[in-house]
Structures are given as C-alpha cells and as structure tokens.
Amino acid sequence: MKNKVFKSLIVSSLVLCNYVSAAECRDVSQIISKQLEDNYVIECTATTLAQLMRSQAFLSGCERQKSSEDIAEFMTLELNKIANDKHLSVVYDPQWVSELKVYRSSEQSVAFADSREMETPTDNYGFKKVEMLDGNIGYLDIRVFSDSHLGGEILENSMKFLQHADGIIIDLRNNFGGSPFMVTSLASYFFDLDTVHLLTFESRTNGVLTRTQDWTSPYVPGPRFKDTPLYILTSSNSASAAESFSYAMKNLARATIVGEVTAGAAHARSAEIVNENYILTLPSSRPVDPRTNDNWERKGVKPNIETSSDNAFYVAYAEVLNTLIKSKHSNLGIHQWVYPLVKAKSNQYQTSQNDIDQIIGTYGKHKVFQENGKLFYQYLDDPAFEIELLDKETIVFKAFTEARLQAIYKDKQAIALKMLSFGEDAREFQRTL
Image 1 (spheres, helix red, strand yellow):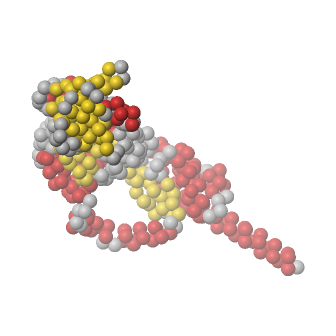
Image 2 (cartoon, helix red, strand yellow; image 1 turned 90 degrees about the vertical axis):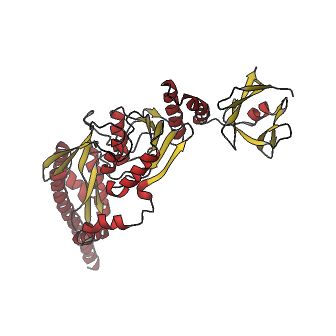
Image 3 (cartoon, rainbow, N blue to C red; image 1 turned 45 degrees about the horizontal axis):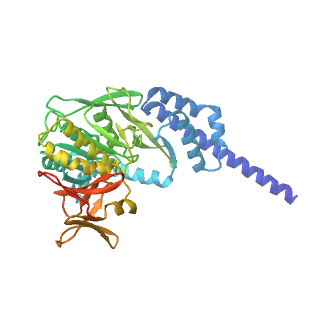
C-alpha cells in the first residue's frame, strides 16, 4: 500500500513538473514571438522567428527541457539557427529583471547622461593616446567611442595636435564600440565641406520600419584631413561602433584597414523584459551601408591588408610611409629615412646568435662586440653605444635615431659596415678583423 502511494506521488510530481514546464514554455514563447514579430529589425526574419516559436515542434522541444536556464538556452539556440544573430538571446535571470524594473522606474534613467557628464573622465572618454611618430606620422589610439557631447573636445584637441601630420593611423584594435555620434564626428574630419552619406540606420518598433541617414558634418572644430593618407588598425575584438567607422571609411575608399577581421557585431539591441524571470536581448536596429546595401553583421569588416593584430601597427606604419614615398611628398627625405626601419620591424625578424656573430668584428677604427648578452658599437676609445639588429642588414642605435648602420654582405659573410646619417652621405668601413 505504501509503495503504491509513493509511486503515485512520484507520477503526480512528474506530471506537475511537466505541466509547469509546458506552461512556462507556452507563456514565454507567446510573449517573445510577439516581441520579435513587432520589433526585430529584419521583418522577414522576424516573421519566420515568430512562426518558429509558435510551432508545435518548437514547444515540444522546449517542454523537454529540465530547467528554466535550459529553456532559455534552448530558445536562444533555436532562434539563432534562423537568425544567426550575435545580439539575439533569451536569458533566464530574475535578478536582472528586478534590477531593470527598478532602474527604469526611477529617475536614474533620465539623469544618466547628466550624471555621466559630471564624472571625472578617468578613461579620457576613450582617447587613450595621441602622438607624432618618426616620419611625421600621426597616431591616435581610441578605446571607446564616447558620446560627442562628452568626448568631442578631446577629439578636437587630438585633431589639432595631428594637424601637420603627413599620414594618420587610428588604432581601434582594443575598441569594443560606443556612440554612433562620435563615429560621425571623427569621420567628418577626413572629408571636405561637401557632406558624405556614411550609413543609414533602420529601426523597427511595433511593426513600423523607420530609416535615418547619417552624414558627415560640413563643419568641424579644427583642421581637416581630406587628402591625408588614413590607416585604421583592427583586431577580432574591434566591434560595433569601431566596425561602423572602419566599414564606412573602407567602402568610401577613404581609409586602408590593416589587421584582423573584426567581431561582426552590427545590430543594436535592447533588453526587453518578458516576465518576472526572463529577458529577451532584442536587435531592433541596424546600420546599412548605402554602397553595399549591407553591413558587417556576422561577417565582420575584412581588412584591406590582413595581418595579426600584434603586427598591424608596424605593417600600417610601413604602408603609410611607402604611400607617401610613392607620391613624392614634400617630406620625402624623412619618409625615406624612417621607412626601412619600420619595414624591418613589420617583417618580425627573429635575431639569431649566428646573425650576431656575422657582424661582430673590427672595421678599421670601428668595432662591433657583444658583452653580457648585449651588442655594442664603438669608435676607437669613445663610449660604446648599444645597438640592435632589426634584420641581418639593418642595425639601429638604441639611444638615438639620427644615424644607423647597414651590414654589407658578400658570399653570406659581413665584409663591411655602412654608417648612414640623416641628411649626410653614407660612409663605408671595410672589415679588417
């Protein structure tokens, strides 16, 4: 008798669990399918996703899940078999739901922008570094695209700092995105007064699609760089707004992209509350390039020159110098002087002890020697200067850049050293020992 009662309780418990799971699946699917149908950015995909979630096959699969977390994971996987959208997901997180409700019902959401403006900009609003490289090449490292009303002044000052640069490198390898308004502000510096259509943004709300166009500004506070060679560095981590800037500038043939294919995150998403336990991350808007009628979602931005993110800086640096040399820029001499050094670094040469042994020796009054694992050059009894091999032929002084050495080889043997000094004739020293 006891066994029968026990078995009956187990069966009842299983039936109840299945019933709760089935109800949960139906309720959540019904709400999400409606949200997708009305607001997912691509209408035809939205219709297909909604039909999927209302299908018996989908609900049956959902009801076989063992927990609410499993239901969320199942829904996310099934939806993305169709959408393949990195921003689309179903999340089981009651705490997030609770926090989101509190935040949206408070004054925080209204005051957020003002409070952010009052903060100390310890991150410099995303502007990590600006400098002039050897060869008169400007370099700007941006880690996040802040809102223009926050970081606009720093952008303006950065552009003024770079105003005499012969070429510019913008580093977005560690930029995960940010404000589209800053993308427009930055892009505007690289065109003339005629405005340029960068992107069109499509948004769907309650089944209505709206489009807004993003154009460069006819005015920028500071210098313009409409003819300055521009190179953009990317990595697989470059995402969202960083991709937006790279994609538009590449398709406008205004910049050369150097590095890795980017993350492929084009759609903009919002967090939509489903019920007390679930949140839908819903992609409701997307950029569309007017030249390609497409964007970088799932594909990423493909560089003009593909290389590892670690080496992208020197590859771009060498390329911009080479471009300036080919154009016979007015600063041709300095570009020709710096280019061999940068090009050697971009080749990622690995120095071997055999390479070092090849150049150790005496060259008349000059000698090269190794001491405590370091390589030195010395003239007579003058102080020795530490040197470094960038490749088998290119030798640089670590203390200064106005001069360098070049090894001359014959039959794979170093037979002479050539002293190269900027603005002076080369001097050659034959090997004597």
